[in-house]
Image (tube, rainbow, N blue to C red):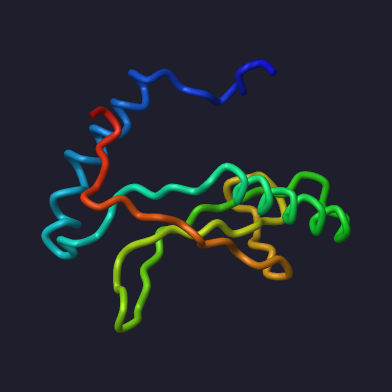
Length: 119
């Protein structure tokens, strides 16, 4: 398989991560010092979710669904930490509507302490 067109180099990824660190990380960590800033999905879980979205979207007549990633947070006694969720959309454009007929995905592991991209 060839490399996907939207892959970026390690240097570009480091620059993006560094920009996030210098412009947002300190403000967020002062408000939520125990929050993770990185999340891990297993490849098999992601593949299963993507197949679920692809199959159900096709059943709805949607040819090119997308996945929107939302920053989120738990609100329970056991955890109020940050997380992310993946939400199916009806298209792959920036403003494509969410597809609420297909459930979102959230089984992630947050790194603690946070794992820097460039370490």
